Image (tube, rainbow, N blue to C red; front, side, top):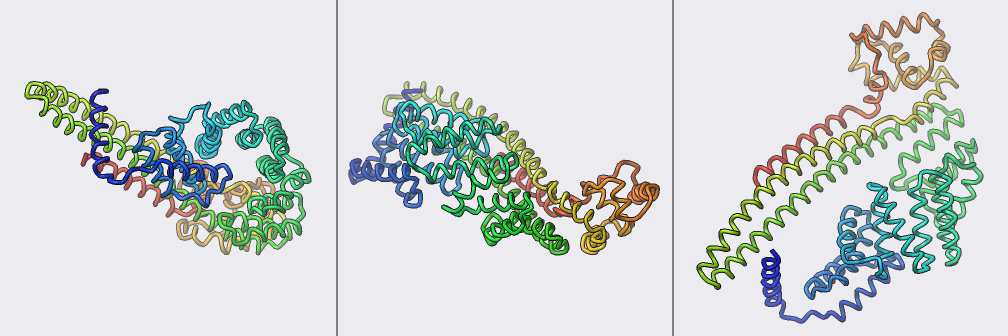
Length: 501
């Protein structure tokens, strides 16, 4: 096997050398690589060109300098991370990890970016690389990277006491560096992560300095939430307005505005704003579903492509060996051909099994995607509680809701009256029988008789799935149908690819 690989590499290098008439200038490549790595250290991602990095990778691959190629992969992974291409960034950083060991000077940067890109999808591995970064930076007394490492551990920690320890350590190291911006940012991220467990004044004191300096929308959203919870609606409105038109924060803007109007006792405007919030929530759900399906499909295509590349390499190697064996002689050729044919059969069998396993994994990924998507479609308890507070505060608002809320449901359930839907809606938002009877001015007996009548109209003696009925109304049946169709098309397409191979 080693002889076969050596022959293949020698032949490839021969053809590459023949096609390259100009000598590779490694010295210029080293200068450019040093400049790009300095930009990574200063986190100046905007001035890093992926095409330049790819050209450097080709240069160092040609001369066989694995260490410099690994640094190029690290730079490329940092750039991909900055543009939110996390899956591609992970691939490049994992390749770099193969040739960058803990003793190297750039190992700390590698651990930092690996921890960042894995934080969402794989918190366990992210925590591992954050700990590696802390150990590496501590051994070299690098206060800046040590502070970043503790900040990563703080973001991954779920216990507020443990997170406080990491926060204090991160702040200490940033103070040693004189980096007040990172000190304020660390405190702000801690306050946002544990916003529900901190005193409002304490959370505001930690978030506000960083927001005044940088003005991140995320911090404005946190400040608006704190003021709303604390009942300071006028102060909250200032930061809610900062969310207007902010990309990615449309739902937070309308949701906060709805709470703002409800606290101002303007329930009609609150309901109108909630309609906009639900519309945006629905759009986000569709987008996330599409991204999940595309990701599953992309992972499947990538694995299949890797298998095809491996098979192509094998065929290329086979041709090269045949050429060598012809030069050696007829007897050696026959012996090599017999061995190659045997290995070829084994390889095809292994590839067949690998494709079958890949198909099973693809189905599992689709199931996981469906489950994650279904979680996204659940109507939040905050919306239910808001509706409940509106109705309890002003029972007459039930009539306003009935005019706009029940029209779509009437087309599906014509046998139910508006009063039936009113009973079901009040039950759905979590009101007990006592509150429902008080709002509708009926006796307890009337309430239970009405529930029995609704069951009979729907033709079931089981408990009504009122949550499911209204959840489908808020999210729409089209999303569920699109999910089923997309998954069916994905499976059919994968079967066609496997059958062709």
